[in-house]
Length: 176
Image 1: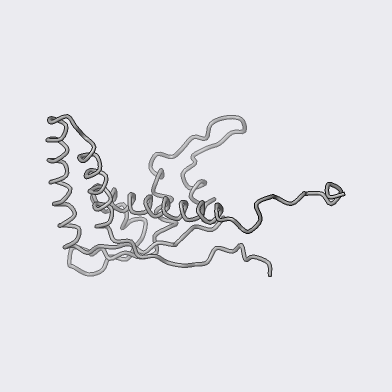
Image 2: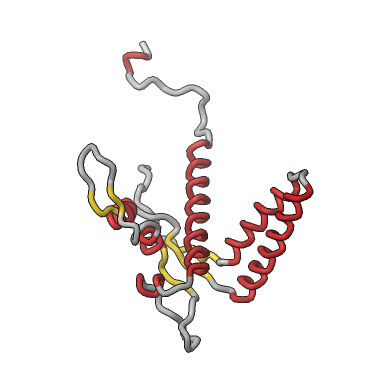
């Protein structure tokens, strides 16, 4: 049976606390491997601050729902949305206002963020722009980590052996 190459429209919920847990794991690893007492002290302070962010993010319970992966058209829109101009043989000129944002707009389907009155804030480009810088960075990092995980999954699938240890000849004449 032929393989379906169409991207399945799956949606994944990402909790923003996981961004801070990821940072916590990285800091703990650095702290474990660090020998210099001054650097260890600075890393410990950074870790303590990170643990506070983990606790706050856990209490907030905020999440975003994203597409599991982008299809070819969505991927092209990410690129074309951030390019200001492009000439053959030259580097593309990017629109700094759109860098990073076009990816978020293609990936995010929904979120749990609320308005000033506590009501759910519908996801939109304007709503994304209205977030404070820390929240925007959390959202951006969550999508980046999601993309990395999907890319790693894709690479692992490619590396799974499909049976034989030798490749078959590309031409039947090579067999004779």
